[in-house]
Amino acid sequence: VDIIFNNEFWKTCVKLLKVCVPLVKVLRLADSEDRPSIGYLHEVMDKAKEAIRDNLKGKKKLYMPVWKMIDKRWTEQLHQPLHAAAYYLNPAIRFSPTFKKDREVLSGLLDCINMLVADSREQDAVSHELDLYDTCYRGMGQPVAVRARTTMRP
Image (cartoon, rainbow, N blue to C red; front, top):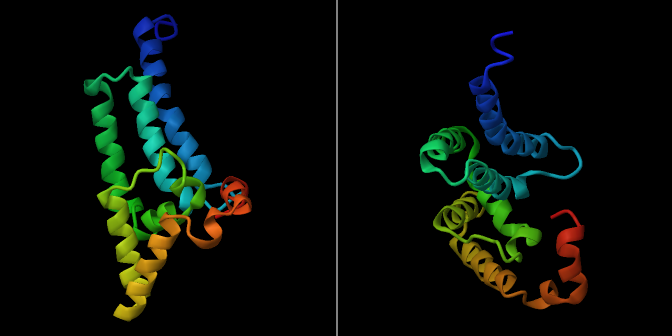
């Protein structure tokens, strides 16, 4: 009875929910059979961290310890170059205004190319194709392809 009527207990529960709900959304995506999650995991993890920050009203002393735990787990166990490459190559994300082309993403993409393509000339060809992809050259800029970015699986 003391716990149920304790305001601090309920305030702590609310803070816990503000942290856990965004992370549960990440877990639901990762466990989903509706669509492959690998091309979305990087973005969803970033959005979860932003949601946690926003839920905790941008108070660094509250959200930074949580972010550090998330980053530690992400870096040590979850983040692989393939996640970054899938994020980059997912047209629904790559061509959205919120796309973040940062060092981590480019490094992961290049690591994947190095692992999957042994020949340096083929690597150069892949790099050239990535430039074409980035500029929507050929079919990627066609109206049907633009519409399909968000309606088809990557």
